[in-house]
Every structure is written in structure tokens, then in C-alpha cells.
Image (cartoon, rainbow, N blue to C red):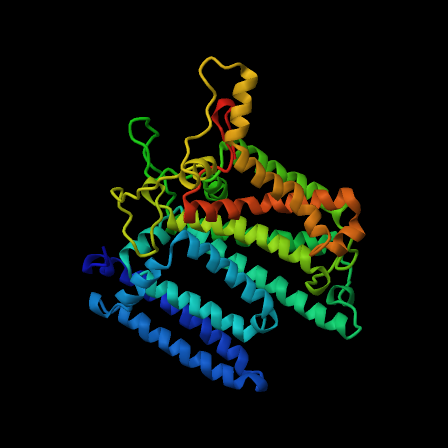
Length: 441
């Protein structure tokens, strides 16, 4: 289901204003750059780009649906085919890796400005598709789109400051935070700044409420439930985790481990560098661990649950129609079944009828022996192996207790992406499944 003429007429006015905003934004940037003699070339580039945006705005406001700029159908189909969960997750990981390795290039202002304009242009062309616009322009999802851009901006700003500090430290200079270590008074400096910010945010929220009505729905009814039924955006990552783990683990254990890990972090950290100022080179392990946990295991799950999870909690491409009749046959199996039935071609070990509780427990342990062996090797054998190989330096500086806490917290964090990929690729439901005591992992 793709865009039709009636939809394009409705969205044409919005797209005209959208492209005009991009044109004005780049026109202002060009004027600022024009005053810098070293940036005249970039001023010309963004002037030309602003003119192109005005042309797109004129086409969108022309009133003819055929002239509204949109992504080609082939491009939309390609994006839909590449939007599976495995490619989405691996692609996000690859993108974060590239941004980290080449961070000195991407923090350049003109490079970041070019990426921002490319993102805005791609979104504008995509919103000419009815299916994409129905998701992105939904009142519930508009704030999430804004948060994505804000998160990208503040991440770029912090990374830029860290790159500058790392270069200064390499030259034997103090970080910028030490140079600009100027103390100000709470009154009136800080209070005035907060007051101005409060007034500006209040005005922005009033304008938002006027032009974007609150997404109020009909009263809740047990007879008619929304499909898909989604949690608020800040819980969508947790809701996505419930797909791969039992509620006791995804809803209790994992959040508790996050809280415990944050509490334990000051006691586990042995690196005294990088305190009080932005730095990546001095704290690479901490930086990468945080980026992986925050972006890949939380932000991407929120985006996935918001824009790619549709009716019946199925995956849909960004330009795919959300039909409730999409059926995906999934034969999820547990690891014991894979081992005993599929691999050894034998039935699952089962205690004889009338056997004692001790005998039944023995058969349960035999049945779950493959999963118990895998988890034992992962949580018991892997930390010592890492201590004498990859994390040898960490073990020497942290000691046994602190290292084991850190290693197990990290391994438990990695259970989420590992379990997700196993579910998507091998339809693995549980590694350990003991329904007799409601223990599944």
C-alpha cells in the first residue's frame, strides 16, 4: 500500500513548510559561514542546498500530487527488505563502530551538518509515503522522532568535546574544562539562566499543544484492545525484552542488574583519569560499554518497538502497510529439544510414572543438561578465561572480587543481544526450560 493522491494533497502543505524550514536553516548557516573567509566554499554549498530545498517546497505546495517529491518505489522496497531484526541490530552495531573508529572525522561541524541535512531530506522524501507518515506523524511518535535528533545532537556535542580534549592531552595541554574553570554565582547567574529556559520551554509546549492535539483515545474496554498494544515509549525497550525472556528475568532481574551495576560502578572503576572532563582515549572501555548498553540495548529497542513493531507484534518495514492479517509462522523450540530430539533423534528424558521426587528432579537435570552446560560455561568458565587473555590487565588491577563482579555484569548484559539473535536466526525460545518450577531462561 503506497501513497495516493488524496493523502499527498493532505500532506503537501506540511511538506512545503518542512522543506522551507530546512531552506531557512541552511540560509542562516550560509550567512554565518560567509562572514568567515575560510568557510566561503561551504557557504556557497549550503546556499545552493537551500535553493534546492525551496524548489522542493514549491513542488510540494504546487497542489499536484505527482509533483510532490518522494523516494522511488524501488528504494522503499529495498529499505523494507533490509529492515529485518537481524540486519537492523547488526547494522546499528556496525554504524556505532564506524562512528567510534572515525569519530575525529564525524565530529567536524560541516560533516555533522551534512549528515543532519541528509537525514532531514531523507525524512521529508519518506513522509510522502502514506505508510511511513502514518507511523512517524502519529502524535504519540512525534516526540520520539524529536528525541532521536536531540540524542544525536548531544552525543555529537559530547564526542566533539572529548575529541578536542584528547588532542589537547596528547599535546601536554589541560582539557578545555580546566581552562574554562570559571565559577559563577547561583544568584543571579544560574537562576536567571534557568528562568529564561523555563519560559522558553513553557512557550514551546504551549505552541506544541495548540498545533499537535493530545492523542486521546476512547475509554479503555476489555472487549476492544489496541493492536498493537504498546507501552509508553520509555518502557518499549522493556516490552521488547519480554519477547525473549520470562517476565521474572526481563522485568525484575535485568532492571535490578542495571541498578546494581550503576551502584557498583564507582567501586569497580580503577581508572582515575577522565574524571571531571570529557575524554574517550583515557576511558575507552567505560565509554564503549556505556555506548553499547545505552544505544544498542536501549535506544535501538525503543526505536524498534516504536517504528518497526506493528499489529500482532510482527516486524514491519518503515514503508510497509501495518496489516493485522500478516501471519508469520514461527516454530520456537527450546535448547533441550534441539539437542535431544533434533540432534540425537531421541525423546526428551522423562521420569517413569510414579517415580519419587528425587528421581524426577534427576531426569529434569538430565533433560536440561545441555542448557545448564552452556550457561555454566558462559558464566563460570568464561570469566577466568577472559582474565588470562583479553582482560588480563583488568584482572591485575581490579583483583579477583571486583573483576568477577564486573565480568558477570558484562556477560549478563550481553545475554540480551545474544538471546535476541538466537531467537531471530534459530527460533530458540529458551536455553533452560524448567516449567515444573516456572524457571525459564
